[in-house]
Length: 271
Image (tube, rainbow, N blue to C red; front, side):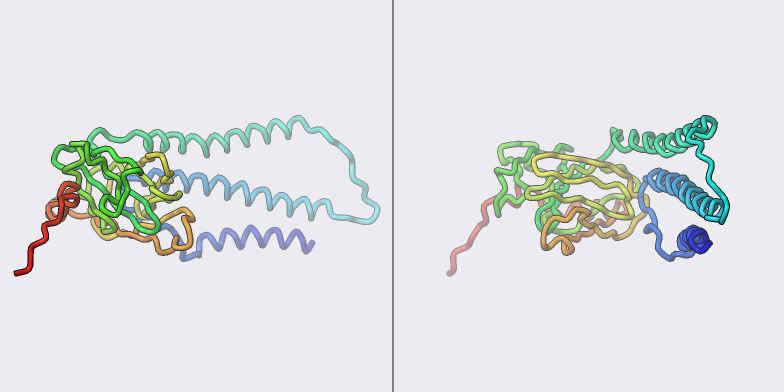
């Protein structure tokens, strides 16, 4: 009897904890409410199954508890029950998988008008590169990485000369416009994650991964690394600022291009 009561209390406590808990997601600031909806659907399905299974266990513990003189009847097969469980399980699994497939299709289908932004992860900072007036990012190579060229941009690529380089500083994005984030790491595994944007992706050395989103709110948002990248992992923070179009263009006009940053420094002679 006590065990059955404990199982019922586990279900009641779990449900109350969910509804009364002050912890929830940060307010969304992108188009990926589809991800939130899919997680909520999965949560409700698994939550109902969890409650049903534990309550059924409580019922069985109470109903078939030991009583003097009673003897269990051994009936190893119940075709009706097996078919019923198979059908319900199949429906539940399908209900969890199908929304995710639709969301994944949207996640990998980048809009044709998306602005490209490169994110470079390095212990323990974020740097960014945006295409210049030609609208194209130049190529890069980790063998080109140096103190003078921290992002490894190919100096011989004409498309990279006007690329805007934002090294270890805040990234600004315009509100309401889709952005394709190209992710590159030059040392270890990282993960560029802004909780309010929901979407994220691992950054794998030697590969270029991507994800896309559309900022829907202006504001300042913290960037986190969602992979354990080393001793300084907790310090690998950054900032993404979503601006109005006017503020974004003003910020963009203040940034330096790769050609400007790599130009020889002029040193005057003392008189």
